[in-house]
Image 1 (spheres, helix red, strand yellow):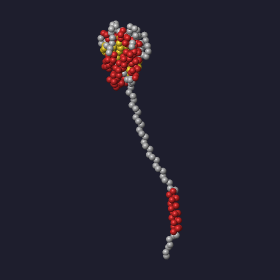
Image 2 (image 1 turned 180 degrees about the vertical axis):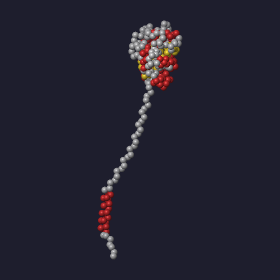
Image 3 (image 1 turned 90 degrees about the horizontal axis):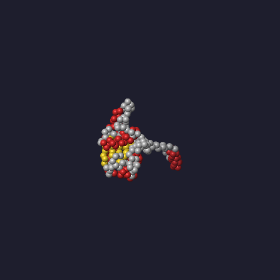
Image 4 (image 1 turned 45 degrees about the horizontal axis):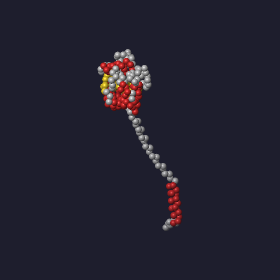
Length: 293
């Protein structure tokens, strides 16, 4: 017996129904969402910038002040006024070049000689510079001198200059005697005071040489050289320290120059150049010494 196939139309309808069912099933299927992107690890924090090096600190000491006039020129120019103006001029130049500067007096007051060195010590200064003007019985004496500390003066002239500066403050023949601390005070052993007088001797000598050379070269003045003398104001300074005699107020011609603003500008520029050279020479060694103090 032969079995006939289904009607072609019916077969076609059945095929359409099957396709429709398959299409509906496919449309109902859910497509999984794309995977979330993997988060990148955070970038490491940038290292902090290196700390800026400590500024080279200079303490400037305008000599005398208050009731102490110091030397007085023929026309009345006072050492204390000249020294203060020069300190202000020099401070401005140094600050513009990155120095930190402190003055032992800002006006017409008169700290004691011991207090001036104490300011430098408390400030942990890298350098102490005391500014003065000279005097002589001879009206022809002229030129600049730079001193650093010694118990014994280089010569009679240096001894006389130190005596004049010390006597103005009422200091006796031995300016180092009363400056020494009480040996019974455990907070300030006497040996430390002795060390303070010698540990920076070499650097003080170097600074004095540089200052004197700059003054001579820039101003073409009489070179009176570098000398040593027992200046009380330098006693106890625990850093390189010098005293600069800018000229002789007792010389009428030199007093006239020292009273001139342009000449003072040249003086201050020469001193600033010297301190810049010294800063470059001692470098980190000076900074380390300042940190240890």
